[in-house]
Image (cartoon, rainbow, N blue to C red; front, top):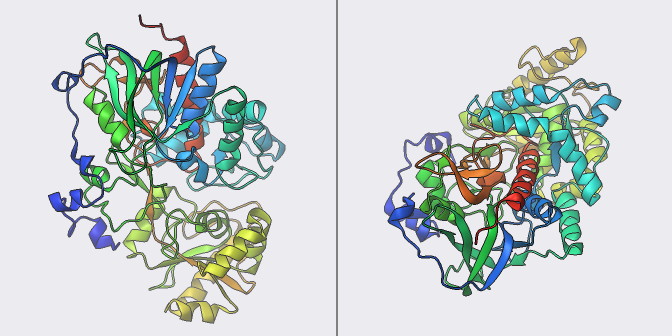
Length: 515
């Protein structure tokens, strides 16, 4: 997608465009609860204490904490396999003031992480929510180890927009390193996510309390009429942990008409907004939905999230350079926050490459492993060039300015300060001067929805008319809004989802039973 299109000059939200997005129900708008009455069922098909909708980080954390508190729990997942976006995520989680930082002499604190989150979010973050996430980041990281046996690499990564290195990386290199042990632990406790279970309606009574859900059991994505109706009574409450709407073209275009079908997404196919629509229909408040993050490290040479982001972020951003192929010059601090970098790429009409030299590739081998790198090279997503001349020619980039750009950066390495862009210099920062060179084309893709249902510090969903908590309804993870403001800081999704999933689970289990 060109910068011109993203600016909205040629993109209009037409009825045909929205209906053609593959989700006719995307036209549903917020409706006051009394405008859509649903009488309480005379009978229920099943009764449990807690219903958790969604099986990613937030849902699994909520289910675990609710079960530990003594509640009976059901996890509903509309797709055929559990895990959602969490399962396929990049595997990095920030923890501020962690033992690993102390061992490596890195000075950090929850307050610094909080400030970094505010900076990335353009200070549109709801401060109390962002602070809770930051303050509980290290505790929650350790919780994944102590409770589930999650395995993390010892080396910390420096993610874009962070003041210091603070991101742990799972040993397997993806969110599966946390999701799988969480699923196994829950299975041992007798809780198995019910897949193919689509939330159709939230049952909110005239007294204002949420008392259960109506689902389609045996649902086959994306056929909304598939499966059979089932009513589940939640005697304590419901937790919505249904994720974002990055793959719901109609819903996202209602928030921002520029986010049309020409933009690819890193999300799994089920990242759609029907649960948010239903929550709004029963009176939930939606906050900041138009803030949708584009990942700056994705490549047009592969679909979806792909395999490039880890190479781009952990190697070319920290040890290489990002340059415009038209000018051969840098255009952004490669370690800036996601929004800053994505906007900068778009300003270059997406004619951008990220590259490193042979020494940078050695870092990639250490951090990513040979199997991933071989796959990237074999697919052509990462291309190898024996000389700088060959790389410049391959991307029709002017050689002399490119060589000058590298020389200027090397001079900055020599003095220990990035004199052009102010980039954070790694402790082992080295000059770019060792062929061969390895390059990736960059193109931002829809990655994370910062907006969602309003919640308070107790993870209680808030009513659109009163701003008060809705009794019996909790929300956590990407389905909730306010934590990240305008743009989420990389490696903070795990923190957000796990922290507020735990809070939601503990609180819903303590919620009074309705009779």
